[in-house]
Amino acid sequence: MGQSVWYITTPIYYPSDNLHIGHAYTTVAADALARFHRLKGEAVLFVTGTDEHGQKIQRKAEAAQMTPLEFVTPIVQYIQDPLWKRLGISYDDFIRTTEDRHRQVVQAIFARLQQQGDIYKGIYEGWYCVPDESYWTESKLVDGKCPDCGRPVERVRQESYFFRLSRYQDRLREHIVSHPDFIQPTSRQHEMLNFIDAGLEDLSVSRTGIQWGIPVPGDPDHVIYVWFDALTNYLTAAGYLSDMRRFQAVWPANVHLVGKEIVRFHAVIWPIMLLALDLPLPERVFGHGWLLIGQSKMGKSLGNAVDPIALLDRYGTDAVRYYLLREVPFGADGSYTEDSLILRTNVDLANDLGNLLSRTTAMIHRFSQDTVPSLVSAADDGVLAQLAAEVYREVDEAIEALAISDALAAVFRLVRRANKYIDEEKPWDLARQGDQVRLGNVLYGLWETLRIVSVLLTPFLIETPARIRYQLGIDEPVRHYREAIFGFDPAGRQVRRGAPIFPRIEPKPAMAGVEHQENAPPISIEAFQALDLRVATVRAASVVEGTDKLLRLTVDDGVRERTIVSGIRQHYAPDDLVGQQVVIVANLKPSKFRGILSEGMLLAASDGERLSLVAPISHVKEGARVK
Ligand code: MSP
Image (cartoon, rainbow, N blue to C red; front, side):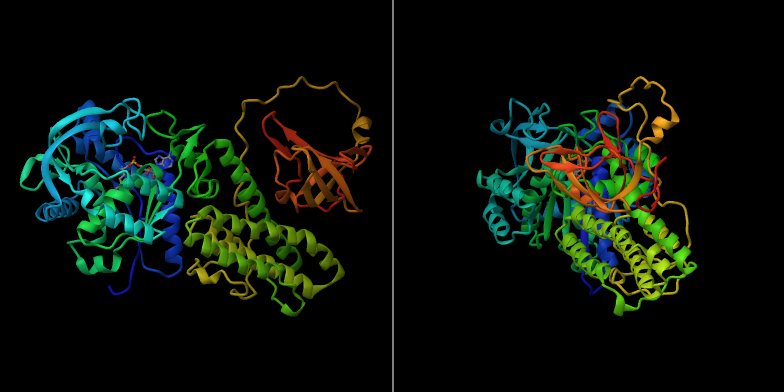
């Protein structure tokens, strides 16, 4: 095997219910990271799977009058297909803890630790949280409930095997301190150090009285604690004990991606298991934040879970993936709303990316008979080439830091800059003036930027890169990250104009807060024509200091630049407006706001909740009359 393998894992999910978009969130993030590393030519092992034992599943199965295996199997199948399949999850291995290969490893590890004296038999007396499958001492409970999830706990008193966490406490602490990348984000590192410093108690690692689990070797009245069983999946999938040559290439894992509520298991119990086995510790345990509904964590038990399949049906794979990866900085909590998904899709994918593609192919069609012109670099100012090179580095660095949302933000900065470049360079004017060299450079630059974007988006989106490339006239798939370099692709391709790659999503009807106003009284056509409505392009935008509503905009109305003060600050960031076309009332009497003379106003639609500027749906010249 020789080559070292980049190994990434997700938590293995409980197949106690169908999964929701919180689970999809972790899995899509891991998938994007795996795809990114593959695109860089690395050998990757990406593992996900299901955690099928334990008391919670046993009870669910009893309630459904099925055996646990009968109960979980259809859920596991559903997770594989349609769920992960439709989300484009490119796992290399899907591990089920009920598989033989896994049972063997868990039992071998248990026996070895027992032999070494790291596992011993005693009596456990304390509390157990069934939904979390976690043990708690009396003093840790909060109001008599599980301190992690707030749900009721059950009293347990039984014979049990214990794992001597205490023996490894100092070595673990030392490792965390000397490897600042081990637990991320850093805030979680402090939490873990505090937890360790409070003193680690030996962990109960077996249960009696439940049957659904892996039996303790030589003592079948006990089944192995489900977390001990589950964490071991990371070794099983790497080939531990079954294929040690492969294991040498794969282990240690590069990233264990987990939700923040299970960092403790991965940053305390798991590394101690590995220390006891004399194995290197994973490079990184990354605890990401939660998707929230309002203020609470999305979850089955709260009844606020959003079904990923319903979203996929409505919006498609790439819109859902893009939203999950882009919306929330990876690591922080973030609120999920369907409206924010629609907004993200419309603004970034339909508007910014979709328009850039349709404008660029339309112009190459019109000014160059579909043929991508060649670059005559002498006359080119290199704006896009330079930004593309910056973004190339930024995406790479952001992914290295697992800042997935930042990586996408960088790609879309390039997209927006290219749209603005069209407005600045006005290729239609260059064509009219017969400036073929400049026109060729501009068109090639735009085309090449879109090709680069198709490469950069490859790890994140499934269908979009190929759809962009089809319209650009490229049939080859993206093969390597280094293709995202300006000038990589020669001129001469033939563009193929096509349908918008992301049609705008109409917000759901009957939105809360829509003001159903009475119709206004009729007016004459003359009264309407008295309004001078025109298309203008925003050239600059800034906030008006000392107000929380006002933006000061400089807009180009085709004749001159004028200042308009507009009360849209709560709905638009100034940077997002620059380069956008808007509709203005050009003959409104000028008036002053905060000492600034405003000459006109912007048209915007409002439903009482959201406000959206009105714009032509395809690019027209500044000054175009709206009638
Ligand atoms: N089976 C254990 C993990 C064992 S790993 C050795 C488990 N399973 S789980 O089905 O409950 O999945 C938990 C994981 O799902 C979380 O760690 C997180 O990655 C993801 N999420 C579940 N709900 C989530 C949100 N609301 N938001 C973000 N991620 C969430 O725990």
